[in-house]
Image 1 (cartoon, helix red, strand yellow):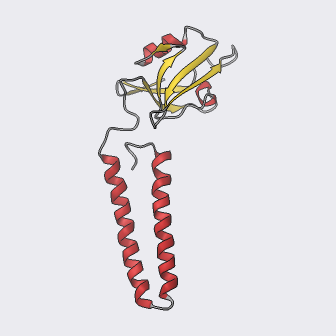
Image 2 (cartoon, helix red, strand yellow):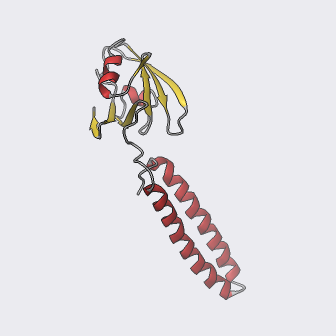
Image 3 (cartoon, rainbow, N blue to C red):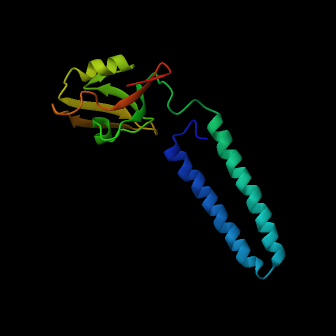
Amino acid sequence: MARTTLPNFIYPKLGRAVLILGEVVVIGGLIAYFMPIIGIIFLFVGALLRIVISVYYMLKERKDVYAVSPKSKGVMIAAILPESQAYKMGLQAGEVIRKVNGEEVHNKQELYEALRINPSHCKLEVLDYKNELRLTQQVVYSKDHHQIGLILRNNNINQR
């Protein structure tokens, strides 16, 4: 179970490790055609290494805070509503919004107040999961929904 890393980042790494192990076991199986004892060894070692890979990732995911926990450096995005303004801006769960329309934000109230500064334009400064800063912006048209489509993580409560 993913906890400290978002699933879309941890599971490809886990899958890659298992795939490489599978390829090694298949090679061992081909060698076993000529030396049957090698096949048995590769089978047991492969099963053991598969367990080791699972335990490694399980322990790695237990040792830190949750990936979508409140942050002091901004407002954590817990989820994005499909086809919303936030979706169009390319925001992703786990990112941290630091500034909205030039104003620093530390909680959801400050975020929504900063959005009201210019209701027709939304300019965000965002930290991604690698702590790299990026800017994103989106024009908000009058026919668009009044919310930008964020589900935020603040004070241990998911809020829209």
